[in-house]
Image (tube, rainbow, N blue to C red):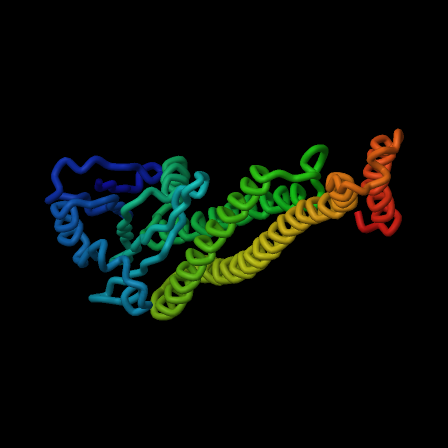
Length: 326
């Protein structure tokens, strides 16, 4: 799908391209989503660039993601997608700056693109250029990552409360509750690792952009905005590392609680075995039925045996309680 954005009345309007061979010259942003070969060729002719393929965008080497070719600056970053669902993922997005025009190539739907499109459709700066659109997109991407980390941190606080301060029947614990908590921790750990991956790629992109603008006449405000983005990415990376450590600690704590519950169960069975050993011994002695056994003729022998078995079970239990072994 090919989307073309043209400045109009202090806003960035989406234009309809009836003919791919005649794209509007005043367009400042062209957004390619799952582009066809025909759309790729049309944009290449219009902007005088080479649109990278999906395989090229998946390359992890910095030289394959950040480079200058024929005056155009190619920048590929890893962005978050579907972060609000149970199956978040990352996707590669390429930003191409050429002749004050921006071309974006993507194969998924990161939320910042929709937010920026709606924002610029309401109002935009006069004389907007592709560089300004790129700054808006990067700012929205960084804000989106910050929101994801903030929500993940809040969720981890709730999980920690469930582990360390359970309420009511949850204090005793059960398998399903522990399983749900472990699944939640695993999902937050996966989400945090993906955000860190995205922040690393965005940090490299911003650093590359800061280096190449030294030879470009960008406004002082845009240069300051780039520096602010670098600081934001660094602080968010530190926060992601802190959150990752917190998730690891919470996971270790959860496994420790599970081990304690298992130990309590094993201890209960061990105590029950010890408690029942003396009654079993007494019952075995009086169940041997030797020919010469005086108690067999005793009128109160059977009640006495029952009393002894009960006492043999209760006395060890009381002793364990007195020693605070239980």
